[in-house]
Length: 133
Image (cartoon, rainbow, N blue to C red):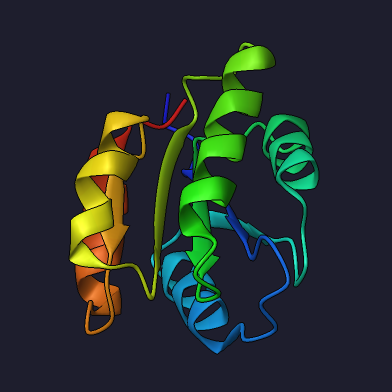
């Protein structure tokens, strides 16, 4: 029996309209053999969590460039817990100050990639983050 490919939902929460980085990461994950669902721009935390559950995602990757990362990540984590889906690994990237990363990790965000992270680094981390089901 072979393992299923990892399933990753890549999302752009909030009002930020810049999604080039999210699309580059989504494509890199797909090219690495993962099943990727890109939810598109302006997603609410509720929409993102619903998509992750519906898609039976192993991971959710959030891209936040708007400065609202603390609020948006916290809401996604809270909703996953409320939906009994805390087993879905959440990671993210964007313009996130180094000082905020420990706070995000404290609420359960598994990894934060800052500008300059390579797609190779992201793919390798995602591969090691969970065991496919």
